[in-house]
Amino acid sequence: MRAHYQDPAQIRRRRVEAGLTQEELARRASTTKSHISMVERGISGASAPLLARLAGAFGCEVSDLMPSVSEAASS
Image: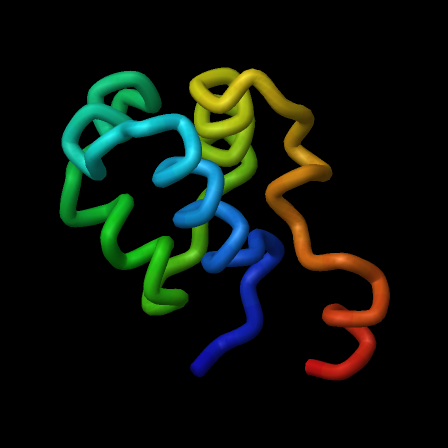
């Protein structure tokens, strides 16, 4: 699996906590449900613009969707 800048588990956790389906998040982030699914599973990376739209949908900063320093160092 390739390394990605975003933390797939963090994106899924935030989506679930917000009570959003993948389809609802995709609509808010102007992408497809399939792409959200692939990002959450770590199969596909999210572009910087998509990360910005996801952060906007969650009401958080882009950096909140990134792995912590300790997680990044271990990968």
